[in-house]
Image (tube, rainbow, N blue to C red; front, side):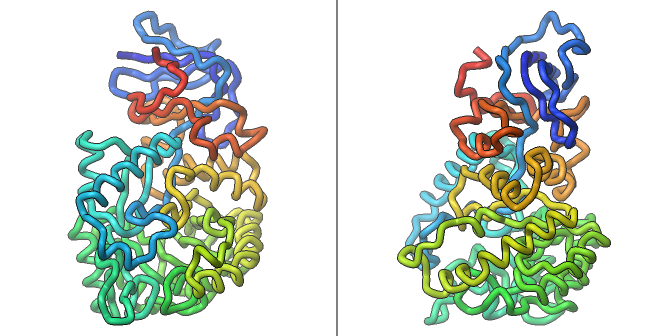
Length: 408
C-alpha cells in the first residue's frame, strides 16, 4: 500500500539544501513516488499516513568498508576455537544491529561468504543490502596473511594468498567465482597485522594490474585496495583500482592522481579516532597506531580540502559494529560540512558501489531506503552516530525499525 510521510525536514542525499515541511510518498512497489515540499505533494487519499512531527528524513546510509566476521578485541587465534554455527548467528545479529543504526547498504571487504547476501535478499535474516568481497587478496607475510608462528592459518575465511602475477589473477578469478561483488586487494601492509607495516608494499604493480584487468573482464567489477602507506597508494592508483581504503599516506601528488582518475577514498576514520589503549592492543598494533594517528588525520583532512571523492566507510569489526554513523562526525571534524558528510554516506557511497541509479538519494523513481532521526544533523552531526536517535529505518519502503511508533 502507498505510504505517505508528512511534516519532515527532508535531506535528500544529493547535497541539496534541506526542505522544511516535506512529504515523502512511497508507492506499492517500494519506490519513491514523491519527495519534496508539502505544498507540491500529490494527493494520496488511499495512502497510510505517518506524521514525522518535524523530525529529519534522510536516505538510508551506506558503510562501504566493514568486516562482519570480526569484532573488536578478539584476537585472531580465538577464531580457531569458535563454534561456526554460533558465529553465523552472531554475524546475523550484527547485520540487524547495523540496519537499525541507519545503514541500509553495507560492503563487507573480506571475511564472509555470499550466503549472507543471499539470506538477506531472500528475507531469511534482517539486515542491510549487502555487497561482499569474500576474501582479501595479499601476498605471503602481508596484510592478508593470518598465519600463526606455528604455521597455522588463523583466518582461512579472510585471506587469499597470491605471490606472482598469475597467482593474483587466479585469486581474483576464485573470488569472482565465489560470487564477489568487489575484489579486495592489499597494496600495503597494515596496522593490525603482525608481519608488516603500513609503509610496506603489498601486491606489486603487475599483480594489482592483473587483478584490475580480471575484474574488468568480469562485468566490470570494482577493485578496492587496502592502501595505507604512500608508495603502495601510488602503486594502487597507477594500477587503476576503484577505491583506496584508508589512504592514510595520501600526498598532494596522490590527491592529484585520484582526482584525475576519479578514484574514491574510503578513509575509515573510525579506526583513526579510536582511543589507543596499550592494555587492550597487541604491542605492534599500538606502536603503529600511535605513529600514524596524527599523520592520518592531517593527510585525510588535506584530501577532503582537495575535493577527493569520499565515500563513508568505518572498518567496523576493527571498531564496534552498529556505531557506523559516528564516521560522519569524524569527517566533519577533519573539514567536511555536515551536508557534505551526509552526501559521502549516501549518494557518493552509492556511486562507489555502482548503485546510484536506484539508491543513495530520495528522488522520484528510486528505491525507498530511508531513515528518520530525532534532531537536526546539520546543527549537530553527532545525532546520527547514536542509534537511539535513529527512530525509523525502511528498506524498499518496508519499515524495519520504528522506535517511536510512527507507523502505528
